[in-house]
Length: 200
Ligand SMILES: [Zn+2]
Image 1 (tube, helix red, strand yellow):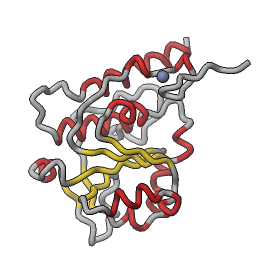
Image 2 (cartoon, helix red, strand yellow):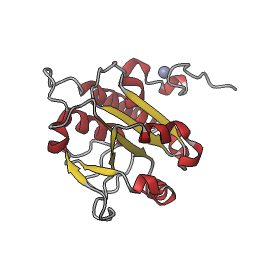
Image 3 (cartoon, helix red, strand yellow):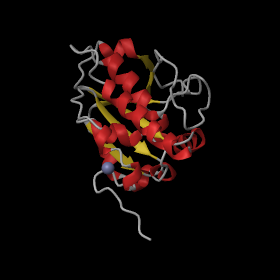
């Protein structure tokens, strides 16, 4: 029996998330490099950011050698900051900036790269790609604890990818409407409810 697949989100119809998505006109460009094992993960949340954000880039892979588009994006002159939770292991040449510093910068002059995968996979991506290790980093202090119910998190401070994107953008963009990025969290909540419903 073949499963019906949504042509927009490429998920099975019963877990299609398209109804939950609202387009968001973000100013700070976000790029996500997704580990291939995460792409098929039904509980993965990067797809919410991918389908909502207007200023967004996405790559799937493990090694930059297979991703010339990402290599260009990293080297075309704009400052790129890597959102990576472990800052203590950063090379001494690598700067770790807080969100407050980035807020004072021209929002069109920098972009943020996020690695999407389990802790182990993102660590491996860092090991495999010295040019990722050399990127300056942005340290994010979440304002709220994760609401990820359907998937175990590394620790209390860990956020799902879409929550990290929400925190970053809402802290970085002093937007006239404070709810600008809330649709990301609403979609996340709806996606979780949809999956929890199958467990009953
Ligand atoms: Zn869909």
